[in-house]
Amino acid sequence: QVQLVESGGGLVQTGDSLRLSCVVSGRSFSRYNMGWFRQAPGKEREFVAVIAWSGGRTIYADAAKGRFTVSRDNAKNTVVLQMNSLKFEDTAVYYCAAAIERGGSVPVAVRNYDYWGQGTQVTVSS
Image 1 (cartoon, helix red, strand yellow):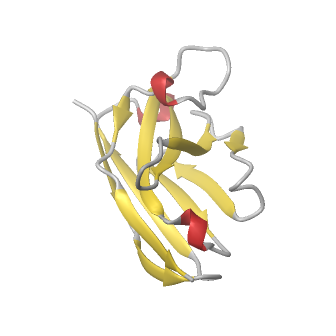
Image 2 (cartoon, rainbow, N blue to C red):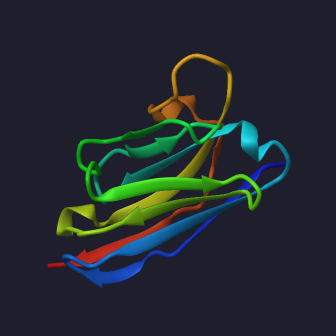
């Protein structure tokens, strides 16, 4: 069974940084594309960033480009989302998700992910 556990959320001020981590239990971590999503109150869950199973490709949502960086350590079954220059509108529950590598493009849609963490709250005060 695959389990994803996020950590690192919290309450920060505008302009601050946070580092979210996600540890994945189970085998085959290196074969998962790993994504980050977020969901603000009253809104749908939205894509933030993804890193391919090989680590060789990353994709970011427009809102994350230039401020967020996704990375992974396959030896530690860990994916990290470094968030800098946080804004009030970044406030949301952040979810880590794993998509089994099936070939083709790196997934950015919620429906293409197989496993999800429980989420970690990020609150940015203005």
